[in-house]
Length: 192
Image (cartoon, rainbow, N blue to C red):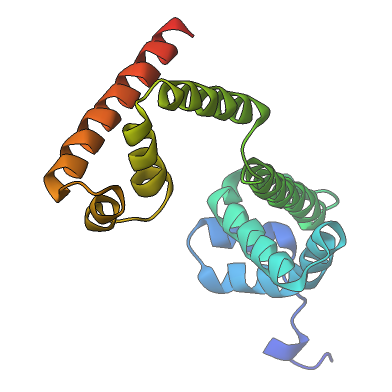
């Protein structure tokens, strides 16, 4: 006579049965499938990304995908493991590509922030040359005002004392000087 079978003696459920039960909404069956295959899925992901935290995230993604595609999983020799491992590998490869793309993007951004481009330097030199030319065409007093207040850090009051003119004269002359320089630069840009 054979002894009665207890729950502990019951044969383990196969992946096909677990998938069918999980597809019917049995979360415990899905949990059993998860417990059965989580380690190999994790190690498959880790083999690709070589980062423990990222491999954990990928493993989670694989089982979310499994839950979402539970009715379309193809078993190989009654096992879901081959499907899970292939899914883990492709999910990990995609994650690695995203990481590499983000790193390349950061490098490109860092290169862009490396200073002015050649075109910007040439344009800056042209603008400085035009400003120098426009300043050379100014009267000697306006040239001094430009040097003191625009290039230098003199206030209108200091420049007025140094040149022996009133504050209002400095303010008016600098206003005209700036307008003239703007017009000269605008015409230079229009002809460029």
